[in-house]
Structure formats: structure tokens, C-alpha cells
Image (cartoon, rainbow, N blue to C red):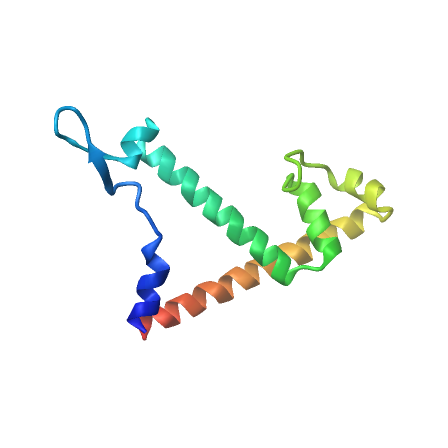
Length: 126
């Protein structure tokens, strides 16, 4: 069992791990080479991980129309967010129906993330 666990983490690299030595003999990490503040890089990496999780949950939990509404509403597909009225015209439905779809989709995602967090807590307690 531990061999599998080690295999999963074998390819993982920390941004703080030393990757070499500079001219003065000081250890250099990947973070040093990137040339930005530590918090900025960590925040960006964390954001990308969270966005990936969001897209995975959306694919698992939502119906196509719900995904489309959220992608258009919050600019997840092309970066430009649209109003409920614009989405309604695009999909050929009423603005109030777009609102209901949006609320339902957000509720489903919230529930899915909540359940995932509960599962993680239970595994950590074991």
C-alpha cells in the first residue's frame, strides 16, 4: 500500500525544494528562479488547482444547460461574463428561467464540494 502512495508522490516537486547551487554556494529553489514573491506563486498555483477541481465537478454534477449557463454567466468559457438577459436571448429562454438554472447549478456544485470535503475529513480521521 505504501508503495502505491509513494508512486503517486514520486513525480511531485515542491517549489521550495533545492534544485541547485548559485555561484556563492547558496541553494537555489524553483521559487527563486521564477523571480516572483512566494505568496504570489503559491496563490496562482492554488487558484489553478481550484479551477481544475471546479471544472471536474461541473462535468460530474451538472447537466449541459446548467454548465452552459454558468460558463456564460461567469466567463468560464471565454473570459467574458454575460448578463442573464444576454444568456436568455442566446439560449432562447426567459431571463427568469436562466436565473433558476443558475441557482440550481450553484446549489448542486456547493453540495458536491461539501460532500467531497466531508469525505476528506472522514478519511483523515481514520
